[in-house]
Each structure stands twice: as structure tokens, then as C-alpha cells.
Image (cartoon, rainbow, N blue to C red):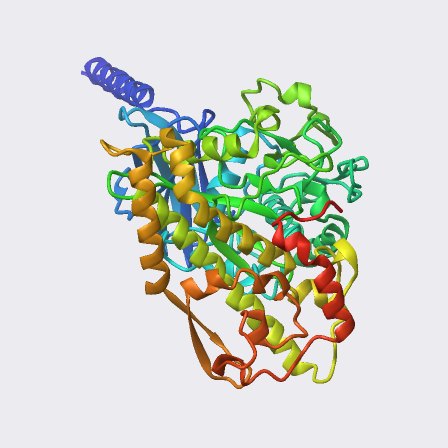
Amino acid sequence: MLRRYSFVRLVLYWMISCFLTETAIAQPICEQSGETRIWVSPLNPRSTGTIKIMAVSAAAPAAQLSLFDDQDQAISLSIRRRGGPPWSLLTEVENLPPGNYRVLVKSSGSEPAACREVIVDAPAIAQRLQIWDLASEAFYSAWIEELFGAPAEENFSFASLEPVLHNAKRNFLHNYLGQNEDTNLPLTPDCADLPYTLRAYFAWKTGLPFAYRACTRGSTNVPPKCSSPSIVTEFIHGASSQASFRKFTRQLTETVHSGSARTGLDDESADFYPIPLRRETLWPGTIFADPYGHILVLAEWVPQTADCPGMLLAIDAQPDNSVARKKVWEGTALFANTANAGPGFKAFRPLIQTTPGKWRVLSNRELTGQSDFVPFSREQEQLTPDDFYARLTKLINPNGLNPLQAYETMFSALVEQIETRINSIDNGETYMRNNLRRVIPMPSGTAIFQTVGPWEDYATPSRDMRLIIAINILNELPEKIVRHPELFVLGDKNPEAIRSEIEQRHTQRTWEHSIRYTRSDGSEWELPIAEILQRKQQFEMAYNPNDCVEIRWGAQPDTEEFIPCRRFAPTEQRTKMEQYRVWFRKAQRPIQ
């Protein structure tokens, strides 16, 4: 009897062992190593707060994001999708009980693409990134897109970058280190500082090295040249404090400037390198550097549909530190073949680790034909401005543009530029009110476009130059349809007939839409877009903050609009502006 009982126990033990073995074999290993990765914020999730999850794929859109508890029970999630490429799925969960969880991402074929275990209230500190690779670049891109994401029709502008990064809903990395490190964090980059500040913030939070260089501003026939890189590795050695990051960003913003992005396209001693002009390489986070020093940071692609044209959206910062989103088009992304700059779309030059503790940046040769990073390419250098814009238009609207849709897109982009100019002029007016009887010194020559101090913060020569260019481009659209009919869907109409339709539409729309600005006496004045276009000549001398706001909007003396004006730029400054007026009339910024 005892033997039979022992035999039964043996059989049961064998059956249980087989079952457990089969179950273990059936359960897939929870890991992520391919082109789809899962990111969790904060770094060490807590049961008392919000936990954010982001799945990012550089290869193809993921179909499903799921969260399971330790009993393998699915937790209900609200998912939002962004991008492509890279593609991302995002969700948030509140007050998860302590314990072990599993995040699973499935591909479009319902196959597991990535899996990650998440421990809520874990005693140990989670591991951070520490290396730049395709996955971390995709995460950076998805973070940028989420940070600046908003409906395309929404007016997205802020006084500085601070309120954007302080917004826990927008910023996936808000309080990522769990130190309340975003509280009272002052980040107010200007145009040239913006891409560096965003990249440095991301590196600080995720534990990545960061490289930057000191550069010259170039000369008439020579692009800026840069020194050897300063490679910062302190972020990879545990969570760096806010004080340490603030100290670093002060050094960073005192070093980089507009010349940092205008380096020659084949120059390897540069923080940025040129990339192919293709949809699959222009990720959010990519910069556009124009030959005159302005920088855009790509934020989002809005796909073309049967009813709506596509859009490429970007962020820029102004000398007064304001940050705004705008459409990328000929009026905002200025491209020109010049001897003193390498313009176009560029990416940050990646860093790789050679030996423990030693890092270096990749060369152009190493980046050519790369699969781990966006490849180096000089193809933009071979394009004329006309060809460049034709290629860009085709990327944004691959199915061709309905001419009326094209006009509406360009018209709304112009209005967007005009509306953001309102904020810049208001900032200047606030400064002048707070500094009564003080005249802002005006620099001489090309320094009006690039200097330091109140003139840089509140004068608008660069913005007004771009506004004049944008007005010219919109006015020239009917002729462009005749010149490049391949970019448009004309149906059975000939280009000449379409040109006539667009000209009529232009007259109608510019009188239908108006802006309002605040005059010197605090009253509002309504200004139709048509009048602004008619005042293009006045905008050649409307950038001086020492002039009243009415002059800055092109109002003429002896008109009702002009009556509140009581402040005028000094005579010597007006004389300078008359000398420089030819630059604006030709809509061609002088080579510095």
C-alpha cells in the first residue's frame, strides 16, 4: 500500500512538473531588443502618481499596446497614436497598486513586437539609456512630437520653452528622475539655443552623453568653423541634479549660436550633418538651418488626405525667447545657395562609445549608408532653391496639391507669421513702457540681424525679412502653378485658367481676414490682411522698437490709425535704416 502511494505521488509530481515546464515554454520571454521599444515615465514608477507608457517603433506602426498585472489580467487603457516614422503609442495610468506588471506591444500582424516588465514601487533604481542608437533617436523624436503636439489648426505659442516643459501632460519626461527636478527650472532658449536645449534636456533625463562645439560665425565666403567637441558624460553616471543641469545649460547657451548650425555641409567638425531630403529621414527633432541663421525644429507631419493638404509643422524660438509652432513652407524655411553657409535639413551628429568612459562623434564616412542612424547626404547641396521647394512640396503632399488647397495652406501660414509678429511687437512695447525715456541702441550694418541685448530681444529685422519673403511667395503662387504644374492636381483645366482663379481667390481672402493689434493708447486696431500686403514697403523700415507700435505696423501719418503714436526712433537710427532698406526691398539678407 505504501509503495502504491509513493508511486501515485511520483506520477503526480511528474505530471505537475511537465505542466509547469510546458507552461514556462509557452510563455514568451518578456524583452525588447528590436526596432520597437517601450519607455516608462517616471524612471521608477510609484503607486501614488501617474505612470506614462510610450511604445516607439522605427520600423512600422505598432497595432496594440497592452498592460497586464501579475495575474496576467489586462488593464483597460486609453491609447493615442502619433507619428510615422517613428511611430508611437502612448497611454497613462493612475495609482497602480505596488507590484509587477507587463507591457506588451504587438505589430500589425498581431505578433509581439516588444515586451517590458514594470515594477511599481521597486526599491532599486531603474537603468537609464546610456547609449545613442536608433531606438534612443526614435524615442527622442517621439518625445519631441508629443511635447509640441496639438491640433494643426490650433495657435500654439508660448512666452518661452518653460511652460511647455513644465506641462506634465505634454512632457513625457516631466519629473522623470523623481526629484521634482522640473520645479523652477528656467529654460528660455532663443532661436539658436532651442535645438541644443531640447537635446540636452533629453540627455539629462535619460542618461545619455552630449556633445557641442564652439564655432565661429563665418565670413563673406567661408561658413562657420568649429573647434573640437566638448563631450559631457556626467548624465550617464546616475541622476544628475537640477543645479548641475542648470550650470551646464548656462555654459551651453553661452557657447552655441546661429553659426553652429550654418556649418558647411561636408564639414565633419560640426554638431550637425546634412541628411537625405526624404520623408523617412525627416523625423521630429530634425532641424532646418537657413543660411541666415534661423533654425526650425521639426515637430510633426500631418498626412495629406482627400479633403485636406498635408503639413509639416516645426517649432522655433525668437530672440525674446518666445516659442511658437508654424508650418514649414517657403516663407519660413529659407533656402539659398550661398558660399558662407550650409543650409537645409540636418541631424545631430551621433556619439558612440569606443572604450569604457571614452566617447567620440561619428564622421561623415561612418554616417554614409548607415542603418543605425539617419545617413549623411549632400543631396540638398545639389538643389537650386526652386528644386528644393518643389521636392519639399512633393514630400508634404505626395498626391499633388489642389491649387485652391495650396493657396489656403500658404495663406494660413502667412497669417500665422503675422499673428506671431503681434506677440513680438507687444513684448517690445512692454519693455519700452517699463524703461521710460530709454532708447535702445541700434547696431550698424549686418549686426542689426545678429547682436546681443535689448535690440536682439525686441527688434524684428529677421522676422520682418521673412514676412516680406512670405508676402512675395504668396503673391507669386499663381505664377508658380504655371511654372510647376506637376506639383498640382489641375484636372482638365490649363494652368493659365487656374492662375486666374487663384488671383481672384487671393483678392477675396485677404479682405475677408483681419488681425488686431494694440495701439499706443491701449485701443485695438483692426487690420485686414489685404492692407498688410499693401504695406509691404513700410515693413522695410518697421523693425525698430524705438518707434511706436503704429509705425511698426506700417500706419501712415495723417491717418486716424496713426494718431496715438508718440514715440519715434532717433534721426541717426532712421538714417541707418534708410541705408539698409535695400536689403529688405530685395528680400535678400546680406552676407555677414
